[in-house]
Length: 207
Image (cartoon, rainbow, N blue to C red):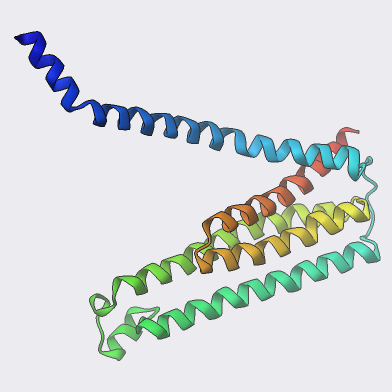
């Protein structure tokens, strides 16, 4: 009887056990993907820098006209992206009757609890997009500034520097539109550009 009850208990929990096993397998695959993801991007960058852009040993010099134009284009696109995020954040606050400071809340006569959950979710979406953009742009400005003064190939400059700014615009659009797959693609492209610049610098100094 004890064996029978044990079998029945196992049978009643069989579906749950299978589901847990499937969930664990998905989590394991997810961990592997997260760990492999940056190395895969870096590998792609190294291949492009070596075999397509043919990165050469650095020659420290003032940026040439093409590099300056690429930096200007990237700066303008990133400023447009910042303005877009700033504007949509304020429009979201206005749409849902939300405010940025305690003083504004008190002056309005509204309480934070008066705002519907959708409003907080949409505001958080914009804050997350803004934070992600800011942290990536900080790294970009640093590595791109160094990259610009080592006489990089024009093709690498156009792809890595302008490509980063374009990818950030795509990231903002897809994040605000709730298109997760597209957001992941543009996030990967912006990281690819960052890794491309950084690996190009390292390869150049190792050449």
